[in-house]
Image (cartoon, rainbow over all chains, first blue to last red; front, side, top):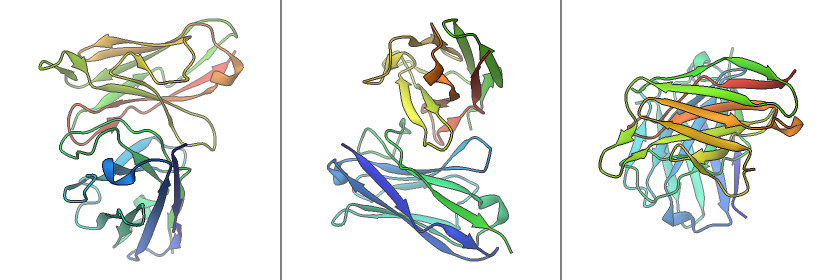
Length: 123
Length: 113
């Protein structure tokens, strides 16, 4: 069974930094692209960032470009999201999600999703 | 970016009745190279992550009950629950993966009347 488990969320002040992790199990991690998708409280879904299976290709939503960095460690089956210069509008549950292909060139659907990690940006 | 617009925002349907959710994209998500619509549907129950239900606009994910069906092409799509069950109460989202960035509709909340 595919399992994705996020960690690293919490309360951070505006302008601060946080690193999210996503531990993957139940599939060959280095064969699939991965993404982060967020959901503000009571709101809809917003794709944040994606990375190819090898880690060589990344992409970002305009809203986070230059502030967030996605990476992965295929030896540890882990996905990361480094979030800097955090703003109140970044407050959300952040989900990691598996994509059905290794590639990042074209978007994909997301399946499955982790349980999510709540990031709250507030003073 | 492709804008996805869902309607209605919410609907209440009696148990056993049909529920219909609409999703409209701001540009076609039908790829001419393979004649596939790059459109997915997700179900999200309270306190849970979204769950993929349908991809390629009409292909049900393994384990999804056959009372759920997806239809449509180009810019207009529909998710139909043919006979609403209590466990179908959730928010449903459409998502396009035709072009980057992938974008989601605003969601439709389905409740029991």
